Image 1 (cartoon, rainbow, N blue to C red):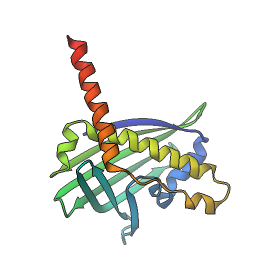
Image 2 (tube, helix red, strand yellow):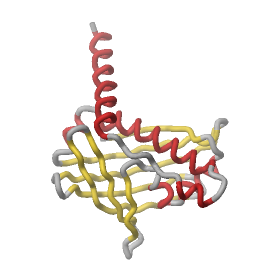
Image 3 (cartoon, one colour):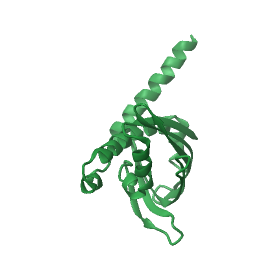
Image 4 (tube, rainbow, N blue to C red):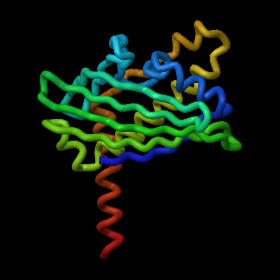
Length: 187
């Protein structure tokens, strides 16, 4: 499944670029993510917990991160396994940071592959809607980190806990409403 998102951060592009180079700091702004360390090869080890309504999955795995300061682009390639539920996930993501009048726009293109029980949510469009909501939370956290007056204050800023049921239900509602709008538009 392909996910394309853009969001604006109210800070200059250089500050946003620097924040994206601090992988542990950035991981702290990703709801449900926990960085566990690095491998000998330099990949990041971590886990991401996703609560999708009645289902909960904790994907443990690795990701490699590469960045090109000249073009302000970066790539993330990750894979993980939910040992309890038998699901697997892979992500190939490219991000670009572009200066805009309001600060910096971040364009993200991700190719997400899910298998096992988690794959059923990808077919319904819920994953895309939930990704939009999680990005909103990520941006709020990132802006708070960038606005902090000291490095200690910035380090203390973390993503809020993801409330799976409310996130699932609100995402489901938006998905159903879109479906009805399309259905009524065809009549």
